[in-house]
Length: 275
Image (tube, rainbow, N blue to C red):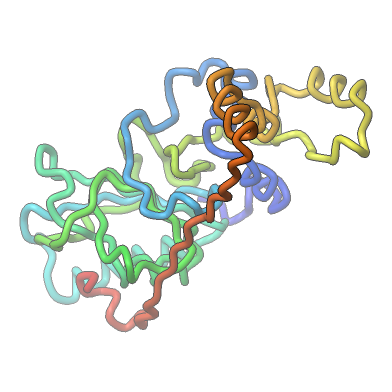
C-alpha cells in the first residue's frame, strides 16, 4: 500500500460536509455501475449519531471471540503490535473496518471498547465500521465514530485474526486503502477514480448568488439536488402541522442532545484485551 495520499485533504474535507446518503446519490450518477454494490446493506448501531460524517482510508482486519486465540505470549503480542503499526501507517486519516468471523455467533465478544477506541483515535483513525459488537459506550473516546453490528457486555475470547486483507461488512466489500465515507446511516466505498467527481458543489449564500447562477451550478453538477436544501423542504403533512401550530401560536424549540466520553489508557497495555 502506497504511503502517498491519493486525494488532497481539501477533497476529504469537502466530502465530509455532506452525509453518506448524499454521497450514495452522487455515486449513482458518476459511477452508475456501483448502484448495487459498495455500501452497507444492513442496519448498524451508531451510538453517536450527532457526530459529523467521517472520510478516510480503510484499514482492514478480522476478529474472532467464540474461541481462544491460536497464538499466545510473544507471537500474540507481536501480531497486535504489527496491527497497530498498520493502523498508524500512511496515508491518513484512516477508518478501521473490521469483519467478525464468528459466523452465526457474530458479535459474541467485543474487541472494541474504551481502550481500543482511545488507542485507534491516537493512531489516526476517525472511527470504526464493524459487523461485530462494541461496548463501554460512556467511556468511548470522544469524537471517535462507531458503526457496529451490535452492543454487548463481554469480551468472550476476542482476538485479532488477521489484518490488511479484503473484508465484507454487512454487504460492503472493503480493501485496505479504499476511500470510506460513513455516518449514522452506514458506510460506502468511494472509488478513487470517482472521488473528485463526487465532490459536493460549493455552498454559498443564496443572497450572494442569483437564482440563475444557482440553476446553472445545479445543471453542471452530478448531484441531482443539494441535500442541504432538500432538508429545508417539508412534506404536505408537515406543512399542515406547522401551519396549525402557528395558528395556535405554539412555539417550542427543541434542544439538541450532546454526548461525551473519557478515558486515555497508554499503549503499554494495548496488546492485552480491551478492558
